[in-house]
Length: 417
Image (cartoon, rainbow, N blue to C red; front, side):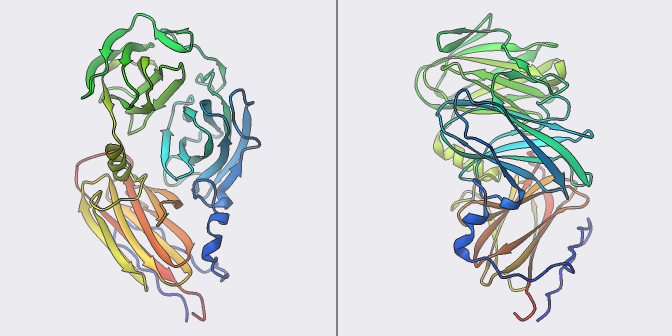
């Protein structure tokens, strides 16, 4: 039997999938799936591995990456010492605009950044527990150059990154260390953390940082957001142990950190990226597990459970199946099943909206990922074994406005099947 024909969507047009060069190969055995994936479930073919595990006092590691064909690249690394402060940043050639994400071994995104690394480069700083992690690097936009060289730096989180992407010793202005805890200098005192959270209005000073002190009386998970319609916020936190955390562009140009707090004093700083000034809103909330799970599903970072999200079931894919919906949800969830090994092509479009397209297996591991916009859409090709799979089409920026989104899943058979 020849290949089943590919269904073509109406405008906006999707790029055609060229299957003429496909060479039939034996489908992977189901038991070999993990061996063919990296730490976070990503394809090994797109993955590099750090030269050594990270622990307090580790030396900087430099990894050259070649970005081609719009594909992301990954770095697998292990942390062997709890409380290891890690800084990961990019330096792209030829004005490449990188996007950096950090995932844990469960495939959950725990950090994200666009332009905090100077210019169009990216930077993530976190304090990590022992375990396996992967860093994902991709280029902004759906049609990158044929090749862009990117250098990925994994280094102790003690460097400030200036506009040229270099590194210098870092000292938080407005923060001094007292023992193991950081104490703010001349902050706005927010008092003790209330059970129902707090909201504070502020104005980021030109070229500077506005600092706040917060007392956390009990061990709990807290979420800190810096939101603004006027500036690109950058959020910096020194927690009660003295560890430094930073985020830029968690959602759009807003910033967010989620921390296991411990008890004690926190220093919270907000500034405008690029040295600007303007108003913002600082929100601090106590986060429980159920809230975190719901929001992880809504942002496409975790498979939905019963009632967490609307999931359209396309059933078993015999040839092609389509989902077309008008929705204001951040993430459009679709699931399907395959009963025989073979090639599955997933194509997606969204009217006037950039989005992230991900394919998950039933265990919640990301098998493939691609980036699309409202003009060309995005596509994923994967050799799949029998089982159930989920598709997440995630809007780049959160919005309540309803938009038309389409997903097409097409199955290919090799000759003789």
